[in-house]
Structure formats: C-alpha cells, structure tokens
Image (cartoon, rainbow, N blue to C red):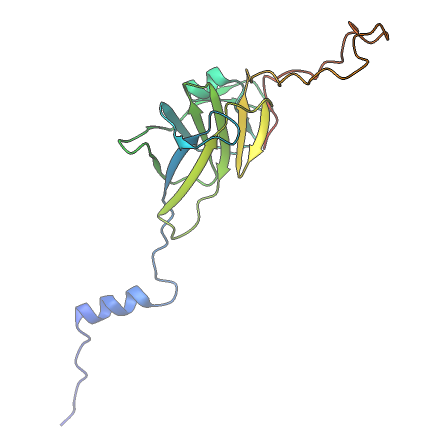
Length: 199
C-alpha cells in the first residue's frame, strides 16, 4: 500500500515562512522621542524646556536649509540651489511630560527642526532612518546664555539670531590712557548669516 505524505499544517507553514531567510519584514518607520532641556545660565541647572515645537521634513540638508528663526518657527525650509520653499510634513508639540514624539518618520533622510519659542532659538539636524529601530530616545539642550550665534552640539546645529552680548572684560592697566587705541573701530565679526550653511 502506497503511503502519501501528510500536508504541512498551515500554522506551521506560516511560522516557517516568517523565519525563513529573506522573508522577514523590515521595519522602516521611526518615532523620534525627543526631550528638550534648557540651561538659562552657564553651569546652571538643566530643566525640561517649555513651549518647544518640532517639524519633520522629507528632505536632505544637501538641498534644503533653514533660512531664519521665523522660518524655523513656521516650519519652512528654503532650497539651497534654486528659488523655492517647502512646508513641513509633520508638526509636533510637547506632551504633558514635555516630550516631543515626532513621527512615525518614514522618509530617509529626514530633516528635523526644533524651536525653543520662548528663547527664540532653533536647532536642526538630519536623521537617517535605521532598519528595525521603531523608537529613538534623544535629549537635547538649549543654552540661551551662549554668546555665539551658531554652534554645534552633539548632532544638532544650534542657531540663536540674537545672542546675549559677551561679558565685558575688566580694564587692564594702561588702557584708556591716551595710547591711541581707545575709540578705534574694531573689526566686525560679520554678524549672523541669514542662511546658514550647516549640512
């Protein structure tokens, strides 16, 4: 008597396919869970910032930039090589814990822009979407006491169009005694560049 092989149960077949090489589904969505902090004075404590908003753009920093604080707060990017602007794809506000849950992000790369509205400071960066990483927990810090308009902190480019003036240095002996330097104009630092070239 000829024997026939029994068919593989459907549940077992589904399990085999799920773990077979090349059949595993790759997750390409990312929730960027951002907690913003603020430090109002040098060496002072850091507290969770309030009044922070964030925008996400399906864009590359090689082609798009943030032209000003006003654009950052409005969720606008400006093209680098041609005339043109674009609005953000996603806007996020802080939840009750002060966290910004941005996403899910699906486009690789993505530009993130975060605005500290009370202090009129913005930060931006490019994010690559890693495979099978559904959530990324990140902290960032706004430091309104810093006297530089543009600086980089961790992976963020920080911009403050109206930074505080540097503290005055104490007068040294011999200064202001008619040596000829008092009142001479000092070279300009160039000021803030309206369209920064961070990439």
